[in-house]
Image 1: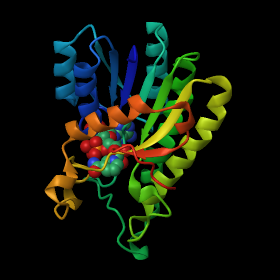
Image 2: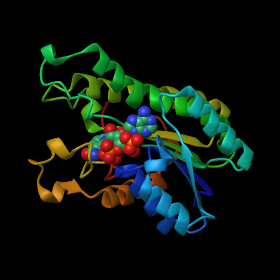
Image 3: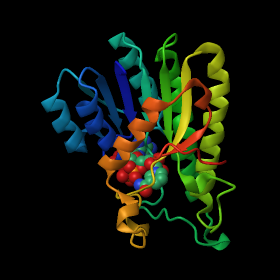
Length: 250
Ligand SMILES: NC(=O)c1ccc[n+]([C@@H]2O[C@H](COP(=O)([O-])OP(=O)(O)OC[C@H]3O[C@@H](n4cnc5c(N)ncnc54)[C@H](OP(=O)(O)O)[C@@H]3O)[C@@H](O)[C@H]2O)c1
């Protein structure tokens, strides 16, 4: 059971579901939940009120270096190393006009930058700031929320250039991190996780054709992924796993 878990991107969707499941499943764990705007994260505020000794809420926007530094400082002051870091933040579409591309002519520089800034560079910058604050000589885990559509060998439909590529690149970052951390954190396991198709705002515009039994609730997906995390072995570091524990090919 992890003593301290940090869930990054916890305002809603899978991140929020992870926080709820962790509270229920690991009664002695402390949970640091981060999100871009704690003032509007009402569900998280409620969890902090219900569990003031266990849940801490901090502001973190993965594209904002100052907020990364502030979170690192707050975790450092607490004096307790992080055993499990779950990077959930991700974008696929946005009210500001971000849309997954259907064809080459839909590709646009600012959208591509947005995908990479949040989905790829985000988890890397979080790792840069938080790895020094993670458990060194015991089991510790970094789990980056990836996606099967980031698998190059599994790409049969095409489209979604930016999102796919940002998740493929995130997988490379997870692998590269796993190699470096073997030297400094010998017990650390870094993985990517594919949650399946989950009924969140991210998937809503695209999930109408998904069979009901294949569309997980955020709570179901978080429960399945926590079971995968619990079973991880040192030799799993650098790989990507799906919600059922199967390895996702690159
Ligand atoms: N849902 C699926 O079917 C599915 C499938 C495969 C993979 N995934 C992956 O799973 C992860 C979670 O997805 P979800 O379905 O839970 O999505 P979601 O419900 O849309 O939630 C996305 C989260 O990312 C946060 N976020 C966005 N930009 C951020 C930034 N710059 N800094 C910090 N946080 C930021 C959002 O915060 P705000 O509330 O502040 O916007 C929100 O908490 C993503 O990485 C996604 O790619 C999801």
